[in-house]
Length: 136
Image (tube, rainbow, N blue to C red; front, top):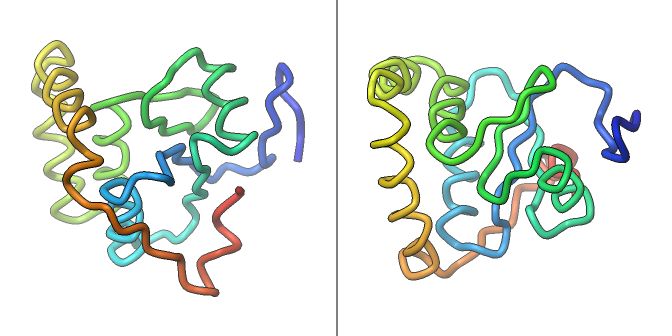
């Protein structure tokens, strides 16, 4: 672990996804990633954990975050990075989605984000072999 501007990082090249771990929809999305990923190096941080709060403060962003190579992607940009990470058809969909301007993508993302707690209420627990990838 190393500290960068007060934010603890993993000292790894692995991407980090900061997500709302208190949201059933978001937790189901993480489970989807775990089932479909090819690389198995993505780290997960709950947005309300100390690390999640530090990362959001550091990058000055409040939404879901994808952090990789010192860069943070938020909202629809983070969702596209998740799809790209999954590879295959999801990566193709990310490429197509990136053609759409952020000014259109982000309002769609925001609409889903506003209603996400109504979409699913159950928060699945990661399998024991996956727990080490959840930083908090």
